Image 1 (spheres, rainbow, N blue to C red):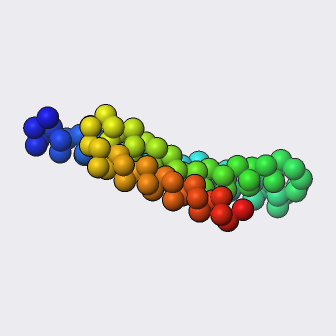
Image 2 (cartoon, rainbow, N blue to C red):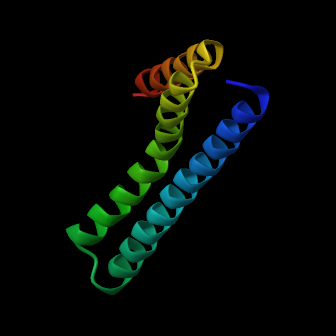
Length: 100
């Protein structure tokens, strides 16, 4: 690939990752808002499930970003950044495992 094609691919990757992060935050916000509203109105397990789903989506959004970046870097054959992305993934998973 030439320099311009690399720049275009990186720009596409940044836009796709931005959309992924936005979608994750909006989905988490919608679940949390609906769960909070339902909890205030009626309480119950449905509200708890929505609140839990919102928190899970919010927690997994950065992980989805790392996975999407890894796939994109492998497609670009950018092995340095693919390796760094794997390292970030390992650190995220280790932090979650050590926390629990």
